Image 1 (tube, one colour):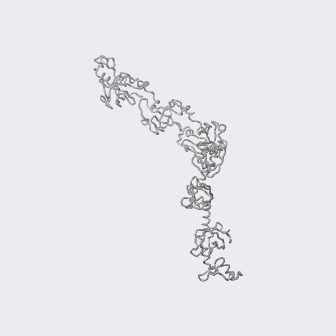
Image 2: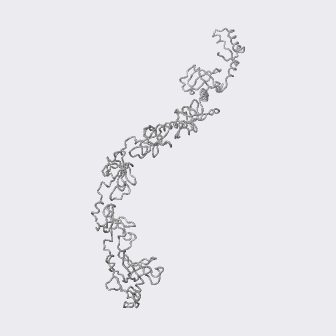
Image 3: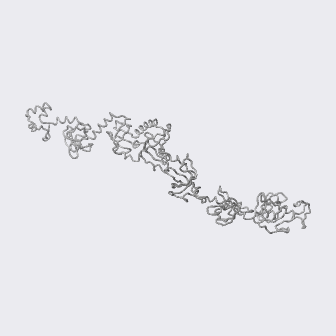
Length: 601
């Protein structure tokens, strides 16, 4: 029934009654029977007030679409005026038509404009919440669309907005959870708070549960040697992890290719779906080792036939290390040229001094270890070993001229020819002089003559001698010039606790033992002599085998105590003992007196 407002009182529209064709008395009777005498009198506020009192804010009402405009849908819910609902509250406002029945939430009987305030979105959420409470429980699996990011996680629409914490988005927390916005996901209901109308869900928990079930099935269904498909989930320096459906298997870098792999990312990428071979299964630890190269026949199967030892082959240098160079002979076959196998004569400190990555070089196969998949190669073997000619070119006794290339504690290295060094040992520098370090006689860069003493072709060594350029004075010269019983003059050069070293001439020393210093017992040699003193000593012995001369000071003094005739008043045995003849004075001249002439050593 339509009403018209007259002043402040709602009256019956009698014009409308007349148009319908009812007599006024009959219409009044019908209104009186239906609505009462006051309504029949024309006052409808009584009727509308009682109807409006039936509705309260917060109730869900059934309404009918009675109008559409650009931004709103006009809905009649049986109140004195219609309400408007924004088209944005409809999933597809284009499907809304006049006459559609729609549930809306009565927010207020009058808003600021005096209209009824309605909300379809809130009504949908309340109905969705009621549906969730009746149909879902904690532990149930639900599906929803990720709406947006909020503090601490994501908001997911499952009919009502629910909370997905960031820590529960995935097994491995993504760098940006925003990448899930707009996606439809499945999750597990963790908690339902009816009082606060709050639901917390977990996608991670669902994935873990499903993976655990899948893992149990997988571990009981696969065997070593099986081919299986999986997805690359993570890449590390040592390999890649492959999701086999419930469990991750490890594809180690060494099992990716028969050839060289510097990093797993050269072979696979995260997200790749690949087929791999199961190499090993540890069911107790729930670990699976995978292989990619094992799907193909190993190129090492016929390696010995393709690359026999001592054969010459060509390859490309693919990597340099401090200890050598790796050479690729073919895809999957690499050999190592050790730094010691790069040159016969050159001292190589790093392989980069000889070759570079990318170079094509010719090498000789030295050894093959099929079990370890290793090939030893050589570069120097391509050329003739110059050491094979050294023994022929420089037999022992050959006098060579060379340059002092380096000095060490034990000797000097003499370059005989480019790449060929000989060792002049410190003991072969002088026949008579005690040399502690070669730098006492030589310096780096000196050009000297040496004698080849020996050649060890296997160890690639040439022994040189400097003293061998002259005759060994211990064979004849020293024994002839210094005979036991002679008294000679020398200079004290060194004093030790056991005796004194006396220099008889340049490069020749004798030992004056502490017991031969004086007749009485001597505690320390310094009590009798001082370094630099010139003394007359008697030669006790000349040991040509050990190259030593024994001296005595006290016996020389016994000889000086006699008269000028050279006889001692006390009998002796000829060695200066009492009662013997004085020893004949010796020296380096021919007349038997103390001489100063020196022998040529």
